[in-house]
Amino acid sequence: MDAHLLAPLARTFDDALRAAGAEASERRRRDAFGELARRHAEPGRHYHTLRHIADALGAARVLVARGRGPGAGEPAPACVLALFFHDAVYDTRASDNEDRSALLATEALAVLDTPGPVIAAVARMVRATAEHISSAPDEALVNDADLRMLARSAAAYDVYSRRIRREYAWVPDEQWTAGRAQVLRRLLERPLYVTPWAVRHWEAPAHANIRRELALLAAGAAGAGHDRTGHDGAGYDRTDQRRHDT
Image (spheres, helix red, strand yellow):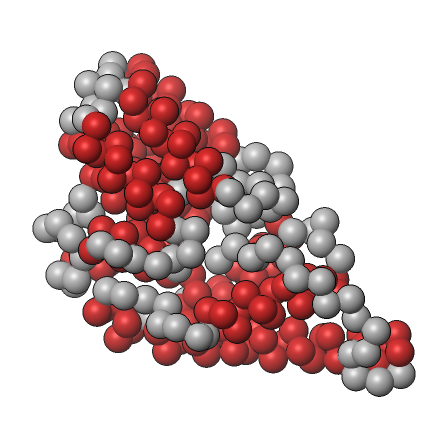
C-alpha cells in the first residue's frame, strides 16, 4: 500500500464528502476511505492503485487552476469523489468494472448520507470513464484527469505500460500484444482529451507515447513471430482481448 499517500488522500476524500453535504459521522467517513484504500491495495493491482488516484486528483487540480475545468479553485466535490471511486472495482478478467464501481459508489455514498443529486452525478462520471467519452463538463474533467498518464514523459509512460502489463499477467504474450495494440490504435482514432488546456498541452505527447508503444509492440511481435515461424509474425493467435485499461 502507498502508505505515504494515505493521510493526504484521506483528508481530500473527507473534505470532498463534507463539501458534498455528506452527513455521516467522522468514523463512518473514515471507514469509507479505509475500504477504498483496501480495494486499491488488492493483489494484482500495479497501476490502478492509490498512486493513480493521487495523480488523477493532481491532474484535475491543474485543469481547474488553468480555468478549464468546472468549479473555481478546486475540482467540484462530486468530481473528486468520482475519481476516488472510478476504479474501486478492478478485475482485469471482467468487462463491467465501471458499472460495478458506480454501483459501489452509489451504495457507499448513500450510507454516508450524501445528497441524492451528488450520488447520481458521481455514478454518472464513474460510468463515463468506461470509454472516456464525455457528455458534460464534469465528465470531461474526470476523464481527462484519468488519462493524464498518457501524456507524461516517455520514462513515466513506460513505467505505466509495464504496470498495466503486470495487471494482465494472466494474458499470454501473443494475445496481449494483439489486444493492447488494438486498444492503442483505437485511442489514436479520436481526440484523447476534451478540456481545452489538456488538448493544448497533453494531446500531442500522449499521441507520441502511444505511437512509440505501438512501435515497440510491433517490433516485439515481429521478433517473436520470426523465432516461432521463420517469418514476421505468422502463426500468432490474434484473439482479441477486452480493452487493456488506460
